[in-house]
Amino acid sequence: MASEAAAETAAKPRGGKLCTICNAKRAALKRPKTLEQICKDCFYAVLEDEIHRVIVDNHLFKRGERVAIGASGGKDSTVLAYVMSELNRTHDYGLDLFLLSVDEGITGYRDDSLETVKRNEIQYGIPLKVISYKDLYGWTMDEIVKLIGLKNNCTFCGVFRRQALDRGASLLKVDKIVTGHNADDIAETVLLNILRGDIARLSRCTSIITGEDGPIPRCKPFKYTYEKEIVIYPF
Ligand SMILES: Nc1ncnc2c1ncn2[C@@H]1O[C@H](COP(=O)(O)OP(=O)(O)OP(=O)(O)O)[C@@H](O)[C@H]1O
Image 1 (spheres, rainbow, N blue to C red):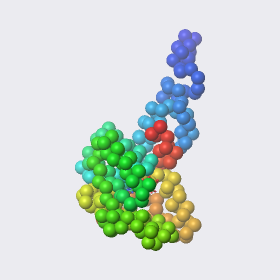
Image 2 (image 1 turned 45 degrees about the vertical axis):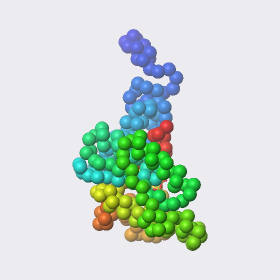
Image 3 (image 1 turned 60 degrees about the vertical axis):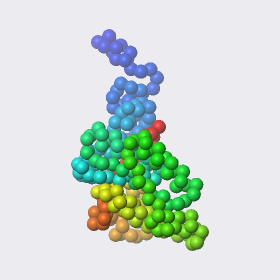
Image 4 (image 1 turned 180 degrees about the horizontal axis):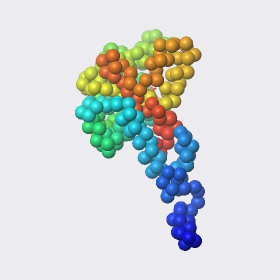
């Protein structure tokens, strides 16, 4: 008995708590979603597994579908591109993945983040399509702001981006678009719609698939993923 206990103690890494999942490696973080103390490997595994379960349980994709990942070059969509390509490979979803970026024409902002997406194209081996406001509408966002000023420019940009994503998706002939909207984004939208008293939007805004009646449905595989965990993941 004593030797068993000693062996167990010896096997435990020194200093710090053990991971509550594998009980073998040292805990590296306290998981924001569950407050469990877990190791790095278990964190990657549980997070990817949770996203896989969300995809499967909600029937987000069918085998053979072409899927465009809305890639802004920000943290959410960059992690989404990586996780989608990993899950597609390890779980053999049989999806054809594409990166789809909208270039709004905002100097010093989108030109920088597009460089990230171009690197992702090479790193993850997913073909990239960039679609610009200039090509679609004849105007960049910089030119629009020069004309209308900063007031309401986000409204223009939001409407244009939504349409541009649809146009890009139809050029790529994809069946679905996935975006990096996470649980925090959705909570924020719920609060906003409550404050605005927008009952119609309130009932729609938590759906994991939207636009099924429109040209191309949009899915949110990160609907239940905490923003903090998306930030931790690449580190
Ligand atoms: N310019 C863009 N081109 C393609 N997809 C975009 C673009 N902007 C936003 N998206 C998509 O919409 C999602 C939500 O965008 P939002 O502007 O709220 O950014 P965010 O929450 O900061 O996400 P990210 O970190 O990916 O930029 C992004 O994760 C991405 O999938």
